[in-house]
Length: 91
Image (cartoon, rainbow, N blue to C red):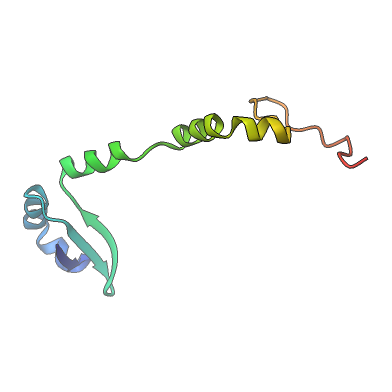
């Protein structure tokens, strides 16, 4: 892994991109704190495709815990109207 400041990266950007293309991770720092990385497009594609989307996670949650949701009685169906707060659930 290569670590460099943003200031130095501006002056050596082409060489840093080349290093990333060759598979090296380039870490960019500001005041010695990491703030960004430069990675190859291939590495970016791998990272992006391996991460499940929020929608996928919600679908899994609904599938895995459907019986719990049914027992508790939550209404998880999409609706244009919001919940009805006029009724007191504790009455």
